[in-house]
Every structure is written in structure tokens, then in C-alpha cells.
Image (tube, rainbow, N blue to C red):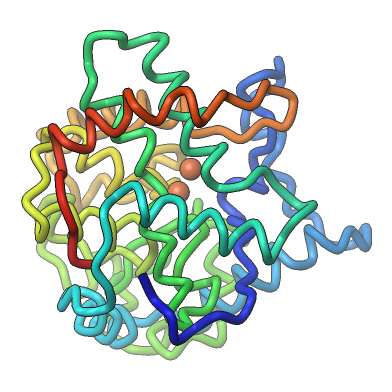
Length: 292
Ligand SMILES: [Fe+2]
Ligand SMILES: [Fe+2]
């Protein structure tokens, strides 16, 4: 595991913060997506700042650079279990009161899936590891490059992106005619997997699973790859770029999303007791030491 970067890293995921406890409440999820900025709430302010930074800096060039940096998988080597534990230590240190430790969220997500899909063990593991890409935070990646909702770069900013297209006013791609039209650098209906998504833990972990030859079915890998892609899976944008076939992926992502919701009211699972079961799944689907 990494040793060179030990400073605390702020790891509140704005994607999560905007949707607290939605699964255990009668309110529609939209009711939690409250982006008002005038009430002086420091967490809201922080969420807003993170997104504005993300929207200012996330260009086609930046995504290219991040892909070059991370898709070499030469940062560290670890088993999935050790990486999950390590990620948790980092998050715990930095934000003790603001949210559940990452590993609790990982086990809660996995166990909720297991309750409803008892026979699909690959799905349980998908739940457990879906946020593991946040290990990028060990390597000086700013929060806005790791967490938060994702969107497509290289074409017009979608209306349903958090804080709207206006939040990209300081992004150079906004003024680049190659990238600021309806289709931008894409062909009509080119398909979901041709799109360059803003860099985050989703794409990194998907690529990691491919690189390390994980045997998790593609369905699970796609749930991971697009779980933060709210403008597509919740906002209904980008249909001019996707295909009929992608609607099937959408159903997978929407199913996964039901389980990936934060709550502080839910009971904390007995992680020690659950590890043997999940270690078995790791052994089955992505064993040994992996390259991150
Ligand atoms: Fe996530
Ligand atoms: Fe999550």
C-alpha cells in the first residue's frame, strides 16, 4: 500500500452528501438534492465548492492526463481486502464525524444487495468494492477528481448536471467549438462506452477490474463504471449519444443505485463476522495481489 502520501485527505463524497438517508425516508431522492447556497450551511458550501472546482477543471485534456496517469496501474499492489481496509483508515482519519467510515458504507451496500439478491454473489462483491477507486486520494488527487457525480466531457454540458451548465463558465472547454456543441467530439448514438466521462473513482475502478482480469460479470463492472453518472441515469440526458443497448445497462445501474445510499440510522453490520464470506467472494472473482 502507498506510503509516500500520508496527509489527511478530505473524502466527503458530494454524491453521497446530496442524497442522505433517502432509502429510509418517504421523500423522493430529488427532495434531498438541495443545492441552495444562501443558508450558510458549511457542508453545503463545501459541496458547492467541490463541484465548482470540478466543473472548472474537468476538461477533455484533464481526463486524458488522468487516464494516462492511472491506467498504468503502477501506483501500488494490494489484495482487495487490504485496499478496502487501507481506504477506510484514510477516510476515518480525515473526517471522523462527518460520515460513516467507508468500509461501513461498503458492507451496508453489499449486505442490502445480498438480502434482495441472495443467489447473485458477484453482486454482493460489486456492492462491497464499488467505491474502492477512491484509493486515488492517496496520491494527491484532489477530491473533485475522485468523488462526486460524473458527466460527459467533449460535448455540451448537460442541463441536469448538478448546479447546471452555468457552473462551467470558467472551464476552457465551454468556449472550445470542438467540444461545446450537442455532439462535440462524438458521433450521434455512438454508445455509452465511447463516451469520455469526467474522471472519478467509477471509471478508475472499472478499468482496474479489466486490468486485473476480475471475473465479476460485465453487468457488475458496468454498475461500478456508471454509478455516479447521475445526469444519465437520473437526469435522462445524453440519449442522443447512447444506443438502445445502453438502456439495458441503465436498468442495471438503476438497480444498483437503490443499494448505494447512505444512512446513519441503519445499523452498522458486524464487519468482522462478515469478512470470511466476502473473502470467499474476493477469492472467487478477483483473487490475489492486484495492481492499482
Ligand atoms: Fe461511489
Ligand atoms: Fe457508494
